[in-house]
Each structure stands twice: as C-alpha cells, then as structure tokens.
Amino acid sequence: MTAPMTSFEALRHEFRPTLRLALPLVLAEIGWMSMGVVDTIMVGRLPDSAVAIGATGLGQSLYNSVAIFGAGLLLGLDTFVAQAHGRENIQDARHSLVNGFFLALFLTPILMLLISFWPWLMYQFGVSRGLIEPMRPFLQALNWGTLPLLCYFALRRYLQAVNVVHPIMFALVSANVVNFVGDWALIYGHLGFPAMGITGSGWSTCLARIYMALVMFATILYAESKRGMRDWIGQMGFDLRRIWDLLVLGAPAATQILAEIGAFSAATALCAKLGPVPLSGHEIALNCAAFTYMVPLGISSAAAVRVGQQIGRGDSSKAHLAGWSAIVLGAGFMACMGLLFVTLPRPIARIFSPDPVVIRVGARLLLVAAAFQLFDGVQTVATGSLRGSGDTRTPMWANLVAYWFIGLPAGALLCFRFGWGALGIWIGLCVGLILIGSVLLWTWHTRLRSGKLAALNSNLR
Image 1 (cartoon, rainbow, N blue to C red):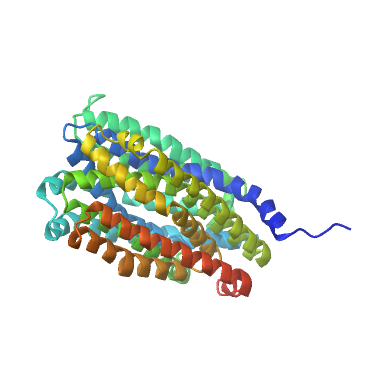
Image 2: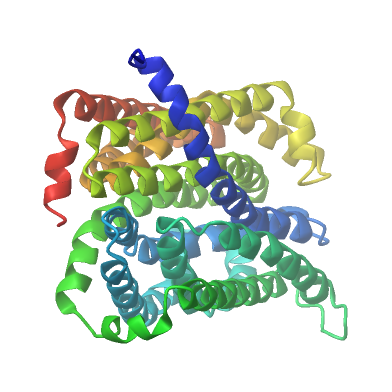
C-alpha cells in the first residue's frame, strides 16, 4: 500500500508542471519588458540623455496606464477558457475568444481617444514643456499600436489557457529583434529612414506589436486546424451575454492593473515635477523593477491557467496546490532579485546612462526597489491564482486601498513636505506593495483553509 504524500511532497510534485507552463510565459514577459528597456537604452544615447529618457518613460507610463487597462478587461478569458479546457469543452473556449475579439474592437477607439488627451493633462498637471513636447509625437506613434496590442492579448489568453505556450514565447522574443532594428533605423536614421529621435522609438514599438498580433493569429490558425477549423463556424456569433460575463470578471482585474500601473504612472508624473534628473533616475529604477516583475507575472499567468483548469475538472485540492507552488516559485525568484539590487545598484544604473548624477539617483532608488521585490512577487502570483479561481475583486480592492489611499499619499508627503524627493515617492510605493503582498497571501491562505474555490467556480458554469 502506497503511503499518502505529505503536504510538502504534494507541493513539490506541483513544481514541475507549473514550471513547464510558466517558463515559456516568463520568457514571453521578459521579451515584452525587454522592448521597453531597449527603447530606454537606445534613446539614452541621444544628445540630451536625461530629457530623452524622461520623455520616453513618461510617454510609456501614460500609454500603458490606459492601454493595459483595456487589455485587462480581456483577462476574464483566462478564467473562462482555462475552466472550459478543464471541462474539455473546446467549443465554449472558442466562443469566449470570438467574443473577446468583439470586445477588443469596441474598446480600441475609446482607448485611443483617452490616450490622446494625456499631453494636455500633463500641461495642466504642471509638467514642463521640455518633457511634454518630445513626448507628444512618441505617444501618438504608440497609440496606433493599440488595436494590434488588444488582438495579441486576446489571442495569447486563449492559447496559454489551452496549453499552447511556446509560440507566445517565440512571438515576444522575435519581436525584440523587430523592435531593436526599428529603433536603430528610426531613432538614428539608418536604412534610408530619417532620424526621428524618440518618436522613432514609438513607431518601432507599434510595428513590433503588429508583428506579435500576426504571429499569434498564424498560431491560432495552425493549432486549431488540427482540431478541425470547420467547428469554428458555430462559434463566430456575437453573444452579448458572454461579452458581459467577460466584462464582469475582467473589469475588477483591469481596475487592479489600472490601480497598479496608474500608481507607478502617478509616481512618474510626480517625479517629472522634480525635473529631468530625478525623473531619469526614477525611470532607471522603474525599468529594473518592471523587468524583474516580468518573471512572477509569467508565473502568475501559469497559476491562473493551472488553477482554472483544475477547478474546471472539479479538483479543488489540486487547484490549491497549483496556486501555492506558483507563489513559492515567484517569491523565491524575487528574493534573489532583491539581493542583486542591493549588491550592484550602481553598475546596474550605469547600463542606462553615462551621466554620474543620473546614476547616483537611480542607484539610490534601486535600494528601495530591493526592499519590495519579495512582496511584489507574492502579490503578482497570488493575483493570478485568485483570478484562476474566479476572484478578481480582492486584488482590485487591495491595490486601490494600498496604493491610492496609503502608498501614494505617503510618498507625496515624504517627497514634497519633507523634501525627500524621488526617494520619498519610492518609499511610499514600497509600503503599498508590502501591504498588497501580505493581504493577498493571507487571502489565498484563507481560501485554502475554507474551501471557497469550488463555490467561486460554480458562479462561472
């Protein structure tokens, strides 16, 4: 008779399938973030490094706060498709994807209109004209990539939820090549193109996003042809109820992303009021923190899929273990990254800029980033685990309260009232992340003990 596994053995048994799904998604997220890092490094070699980095970083933050919110409205696909796949109901999974596309088409003009107002709002906020004017055409170029970004996002959610993950990794890694060549050609004027400065970086990113959407579409055609494309005909109808269900689940997830990205965008805008040098140091630390965040973000996507699939199969105990294995992996990686930031802050900052003043500010902020790495990993993966179970509201409220009612007000107070500058803003962000990570870890622990996952799943059937 075989002895039953202990809790530790059962958790360790879950690491392999979690890693098998997570690793391609982690590489995809790193590829996503690498484009922004490469953009920052490439524009940082322009004559006025501080202004170039500051304007590009501000434009990216403002764009992402709106566009990624729109993409977040499609996150309900994680839950619906993964649980349908767990029930072996591929028709329902396809039905969700098709209506996710209808939702993306509806959202695109609204998001593009909202993004177009950012330069005017930055003027009202008091950001200097020297940062806003070079940012304006850069932001316009990014805006034209909104539709392919949403299409890529919808296709990716479907593919990863049915365990087709390697093409996602390929799309993001190869898109970096497209983006690098585009940056080289359009920023500095090669291959017959005029030198466009930071605006060229925006157009390069737009082209890379079109490329990613095309790769995902080709993957869908290939992967689904094996199941029989003829079966898709019945899934092509517009279903207002399914779109509404996607929004009900996706809106809290999108609000959580907006609260998180918006908090860092607000921090960027506050740093912009301090001038180009503090803003450049902020952008260096933000790029590094965002880069390491991509690993737990990929693990979070795997957690959402594995938890959702297990619940779809009606196995809540394996859903529990899938979530915990992902949380442990994410927390372990981010703890290592925190040690790296503490050990090498100045060499890391020197990668982005040769200016010694900018390096000093960036290195100082990296020490604060080191303090919240562990909690950032925990909150990110716990969010994915909860989303797979159908709970997108708890992460939303945790982010709203911790960032906007505690972290940002505290950071602004330290920055402007006590004169701590960008360091004060980052300490406020650190406090917010510690609170979010602690709350979401406790929430998942409570779900584990109270067995609420099955009840949450019953609302999605």
